[in-house]
Length: 201
Image (cartoon, rainbow, N blue to C red; front, side):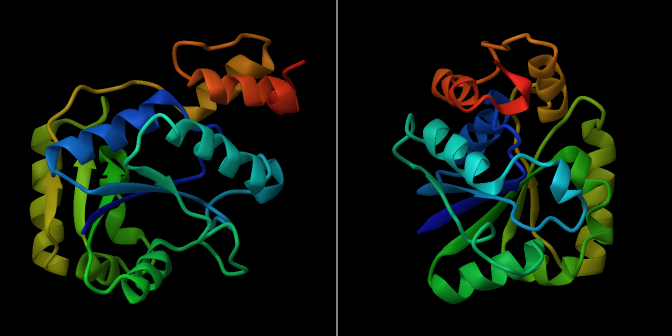
């Protein structure tokens, strides 16, 4: 089975994340895509993040629309720091016969070589890159070539429409009392309202 892996804080999950999942699913004929909300992120202040259970529930609600989209508790139920290489090692151990496809945005590709153990990540999966506005394709191809030479990695660019939206901007919108209905799944927005997340009343 071909499994796509899309990780992130998903704070909140938005239509841009779902767009990334759909693009990868269609472009590489994946059997499933798994959303993996971050647990103990090494790069973010957890005290400033929405509780993991709420982020998981928002992902679960967003995934219901797609029969091939699943949500994993692997990171949020772990006491370890949520490093991508650890997550992929656990997934490969649990699913040794499956092919793993790690999905990332083009902005993350720019500093992939600074991640914790990028060589392990490259050895465990094929990396699928979604272009972002601030990262042009020529620059991406140059970076991919550099990474291939350093880590013997298999990195592919997914050709799809760019979706300019960020969780940070959406959180700011929600805090100001705006409801970005076009960028959040209706069931996710309903959950945010029900739980009064991001200051929504």
